[in-house]
Amino acid sequence: MFNLSILEIQRILTFGTIGVFNTLFDLAIWHSLVKYIKPDSSLEKFIFKLKLNKYSFSQGIAFVLSNIGSYFLNQTFTFSDSNTSASTRSFGVFFLVSFFSLSVSVLMMDILTKNARILALSQKLPKPLASRWALIAKLMVAPITLTTNFIGYRYFVF
Image (cartoon, rainbow, N blue to C red; front, side, top):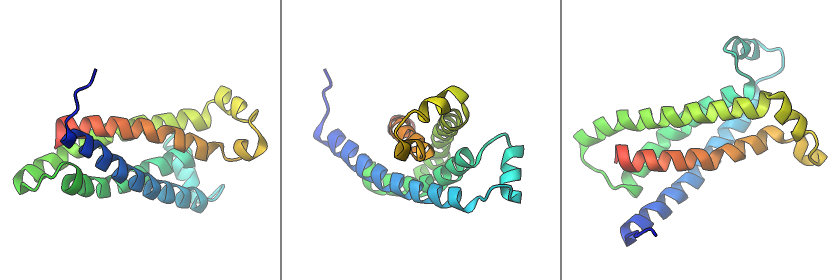
């Protein structure tokens, strides 16, 4: 079905390893921001004016910060692109691909944490899971973002 070379398999494994690291980094930032944004604070009120909630807002911030690191790690280790002029161009395309993934991830987080039907279903989960629904939603979004990023980076950036 697929005829993957050893180099392509190595790229996928390296990308996956960097992806796990970046996902953990992203999750740490996201969790910190969610805990930092207190109910009825001026920051939360600002976020609501953006038509977001603290989960989707934190998703956007964490995603951008973790993707800056992702660019340099993937450029160096996954796709081995050391050409400086190509790097400058690829940096812009990288962030366009990342922006697309960011849009998808923020939209998905917003749906998973604001949609009444989904929230009603989440409350039917066992209490330890229901109380951590935002974290579960975050973990559900991660594999989709990882896949979108790999395809975009592989074919458009590096």
